[in-house]
Length: 340
Ligand code: GLY
Image (tube, rainbow, N blue to C red; front, side, top):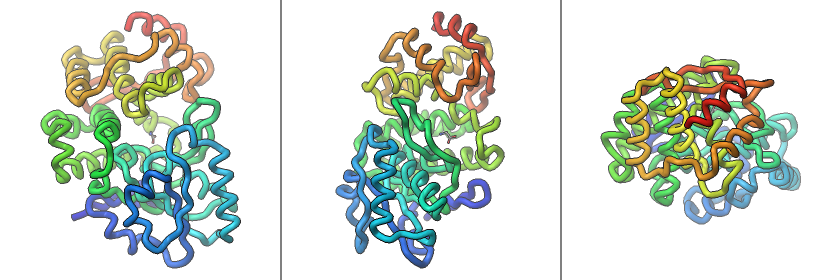
């Protein structure tokens, strides 16, 4: 069973037993495959009959040097503008694939097989791609939609529990932004339950993609509503910049807690909803306190690329299933942060 969703009218996301559909999704003609060393080792069945380009795993490799190396290899292999680039992996591989494909010979078509929960529910869907620069996440990149994203939850069987948990942070984020039912499903099923049930996991992915697809289709280039998808991320990116202790999903979990705390202090989120957010993230096994002092986070946040002039676009939850975007001046933010 699989589900098909459209993003921005031109990117198809297939969820469920989706790898089986790959041959129908791929165009005729030359295809180059990009993956990382871990995915190649864990899923050799995905690479039968092809010689993928292989990058090293890890956020530290999501940078321009890797893009150059991949492009050089594409040139060496004689890839031209009709070549299709297929990225097979988690968010780092799909971000790199989208970026390489967008700039190689001014743009070649591309698609993804997304192998992680985090990739399925967020990173691989919506057309953002790019690389980090000097510790700033996704500082260089473009908006470009993949032709398709294959999200097959059976591929998660090789993921460590920590990676699945990290992906759930993004799904919880999506629930808080606009799908109370998704939030309740995760609450009801719990971490172990979701790991055991591919049906429940498929539902988490479908609901997350559905909400993201709707938002991205209305605001593809993040001029307004798409900013909501950054809920918790202003704090999370600051945490990732200041400390190597947490992976992205773990930092997002702390970011969601801090955003909820801030929203309750400002008076837009009822205390009961804040408790529900903290309760779910704690039950899923996340640490919910920042690993560095708030003053350090504030310093990093004021340098976030989403900040404009002397203020920052902050996403605040107003209920489970609703949020608003506020432009908060840094001086005001400093005062609030001092009280969190
Ligand atoms: N990860 C947030 C977005 O795609 O807009």
